[in-house]
Image (cartoon, rainbow, N blue to C red):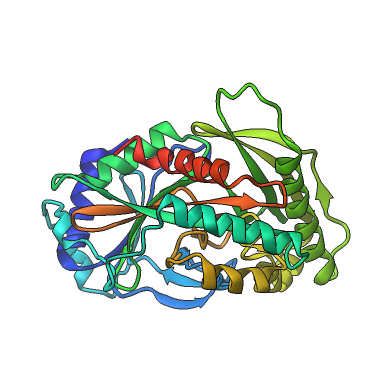
Length: 370
């Protein structure tokens, strides 16, 4: 799948201080690589636009860092070059070893690592607020720090994720504004292709080999997300969407409840409604809670760490299709360690110790391959 080739071109990008992204769409093998000579800019996601990679922090509605590539590759084939920029000639003839020390890292490297007792207290606070009818659902998240070897190879790790998680959106993204992130997320936020807009309600978590059935708590979580998405369509005046049946889907070593929503219309009509749809949809109850804005404020006050780009979104846009994914099963890379992020959906039936264990299982998605 071109490990040596990609290590070379990403090495050259890092040596020059260029922002870059690599990704693989679910159930695809094609590797898309974006290298930008200029810094990404923050702007609303504009579907049907020129090719770009987008990366958005938690709770930013429809805005994202937009990386417009000066060089774009599909596997090892160069498809786009900026012929007006002299930098591309020098880059294409450059060989440079990839150095982790030259990758972009956030200016504030540390994030607060929540211990088990803090997280249990957080979950119990959330359950109490739900029982008081202040919320219908909350998602309690946390992060942990893990040491990595000095010879950690981010490109090899990316290809390992691609092989291990065929059904995930796998990406690595590095820019001066965001630092360096890598992930394998199972959750579609929204896609637009062939005059069809699609999104998905995803909730509940069981291990791959679990023998127990879905509980009332997990089915309740799924219903909350479905109701929220139906309300998003209603808010922007769309009634002719279709909803699929609830199914169990695999995501690495875990399983989730999932149901698809689709809306088929003219490209012009979808483009006209897309921005408002994304603003209403993001963040979904699967990563935040209900009601949305009140839940986001509760989490900001009580979680005790910065979500940063965890549970935001990442994806690709071009003139023919848009694929955006919730940034789950992700980690933030540091010089000597990495920060892993995970969350669990909280309802009135939640048991704090079990929610802690769920976040442990979710972090294993990436941790096992370290």
